[in-house]
Amino acid sequence: MAVPARRTSKTKKRMRRGHIKLNVPNLQFDAATGEYRVSHHVSPKGFYKGAQVLKKDTDAKA
Image 1 (cartoon, rainbow, N blue to C red):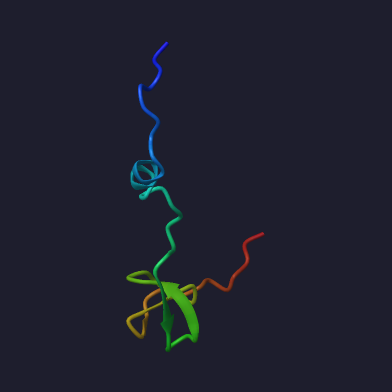
Image 2: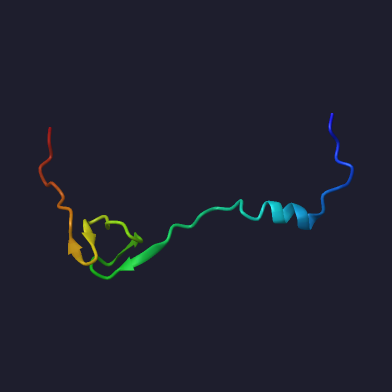
């Protein structure tokens, strides 16, 4: 069984684990809709760059 010859220091351990973290989504405030949205994505209301690009279907299919 492999056993390390030397103890790994706190600095080396933390440098190795430095990239292990949660990613925060890049949210931008959209003035057209007044909501936050992810950059370079269509807002929940269907707006992109101030223009409506998607229309929600109001008909509920049963």
